[in-house]
Length: 640
Image (tube, rainbow, N blue to C red; front, side, top):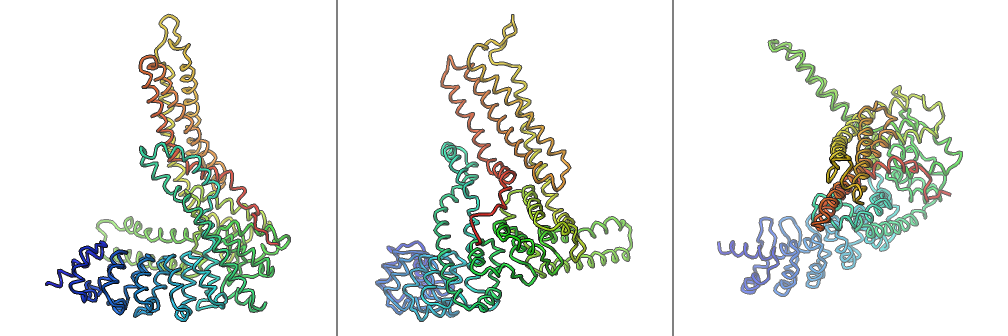
């Protein structure tokens, strides 16, 4: 019982970095430092290291022997493993000064401290442990460490590990995975995260003053802007990561190119570098690869698809745009048909996850059938027969789903570029844009060509985009309905305000009493602008609600109406509040001048709030509608 109480005190002290409480206990009985004080057999040093209690660990080093640092918990980990996981380099340094062997001691599962730190993604800790772990031990896990560092975007660490010895770039493990393959898949993720680029910078610079004014008063606006400011803060960091990834890629590719021609092609094919880069949208790597080895452009994967087919399937426009740089070869590339009889235009029609959603929807269909076909007084035989049909149908549908999930990775994709577009309507717009762009480069006969399932590209597109079309229609109608209610309320108020003028009318002539005042003109013009813009907004949203919602409507018509409707709604809100503020200046300016100014200041809050909450939607619609035509233009990357 005595020890139990002491263990609890030490445990809490280690957790809270409270050396003042632990010091007299440990000085009185130094052996307590070797006792296991937790359920999993951790010593007080384990707890302090895991809790990042830096002061506690440093002081404890003066009371224990170096052998005490090698004690394992019940899971086979030393306290140094916990220090590595904590990411606090100062703790690791203090422990290693006491016992230099700690970085080289594996746990019972063979896990080294550096491996644990790399898995968690502690960049500084891994960099430190790279220097203090013996080279012999490091060489045993160097490949795994390099791959882990790449996955966790620790490119400076990966570059350091690579330079400690060659031979890693061409090492191929089970599953044909290589470190270059890992980097090819990962490096583009850096540039994709900043895809907004100049748009985001412009938005943030434009809105920052407004945000500064209202951040303390409008908490909901803060929620909207927090992600944007977080992205601004990480822009320099992401830029550095991309530079480091580029340097690592250069080093890996330089070693890769040392292989003889046939071996190089074999390694590229085995490790799936070419098509993985196309799938990830890593246009930088593809340009380097094809520039040095132009014949790779003809390489097809196991499904008989080139990099351009893969780029279309995964909606990677930067990779697809390279097709405009290969001249007449483009006409030959587009003639290639995959193993399922799909030409490149068929691949635009594929939207894999939609298939499974449709199949899942079919599971519930037989249930409704049972409810309709079985009356309340039905006998057990009929009910059991219906139930059997239900179970058979569910089994069949589940089997189809399972098969579709196991067939090909490419058939069940949801492209990252697709998910970056906000809203089902804009996603549908992007899909149609892709179809029309690819349609331009294929022969006319390919428009009517049928695949192995007997479907033309347009039929496949329509079938697999049914759910997206319906979701886009619902999204458009919901948005239009909400905005139209606001526009209608504004129109009603400003129409009434036009006939209830501030100060009233002259009883003899019927003219406004305040007609000669300057503020009256501001009121009249603002009220009229608010009325007309709100009516235009209502018309726009009404035309959205009455649209036929064909596929082509989503390309320009519907987004343009939504954009114009949102713009006029914003104008009507600004004008209405301006008219409201002008009224206060007319009525109260002569007696209480401070009141109109205060009211005018508060009138700006709804305007700023509407802008803060709706800017993302407005810019997304504008960008997707009017800037998407530049989506497939050849970029700065030149193949030759």
